Every structure is written in C-alpha cells, then in structure tokens.
Length: 161
Image (tube, rainbow, N blue to C red; front, side):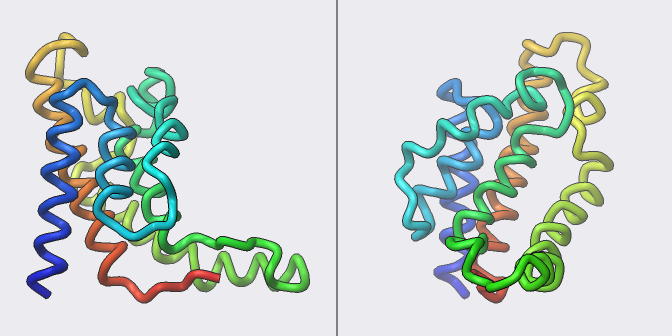
C-alpha cells in the first residue's frame, strides 16, 4: 500500500513539474504516468497527447488532462490485441463489460470532483486564459488527474485482453 501511495504521489508531482516546464495538460498527465508505471510504451508516445491541450487543440472542449487520463489508463488496462476475441460481438461485449466500466468510473469521479470535464467550464472563471490564476487552476486539475489515473492503474483489477 505504501509503495502504491508513493507511486501515486510521484506521478502527481512529475505532472506538476512538467506543467511548470511548459508541457500542456495532456502531455503532463500522460508523460508522468508513462514514466512511473510499467506500460511497455516509450515516453515518446507522449506526442499522441500533444493535440489534446487546451481542451483538444485549444478549442476548450474536453479537458486535455482528462483526455490523457483515458490514454494513460488505456496504456495499462487497454486491449493490446483488439482482434483477440473471435467475433465482433465478443469484442464489443468485452469492451462493455470489462473495459469501459473502469474508464467510466474514473471519468465520473473527475466530473463529480470538478463539476465538469469540459475545459471551457473548468476555466470559465478566469478572465485571462494565459494568466497565472488559470494556470494554477489547471495545475490542480492536472495533478488530480495524474494521481487519479495512477491510483486506477495500480489498484483496479487488470482487465487487459
């Protein structure tokens, strides 16, 4: 339990530090997770998260940090071979019964904590999107998401297929 807590804290702190260094919200969450968990993926896949910053390409839709929690959890819980099941029905059933519930629970926990998963809602009260107050608010979201996905990655039953 103590090792898990330490890994969660390390993931959170790395995400905070990456944000201080100028990485976007999604890159912070994904890279910190990849570096602290045995995913089998190189940290170079962080490029997959680059377009999710600012709520997907700065459109302020789904928060990039939240999108990256899904990518990060998928790196340890997702299907490595989606064609492993023989039929489309079996593949679909596996998603609905084994995989989606984990991702859904994590997103519901984030939404319950912050009241939304939309960047525009999460940053609505900041007049200047580039200002320090918004950056501090986003850093808290990033840290929360990094810690949460680290917890889900460590404590939930592994349902990889």
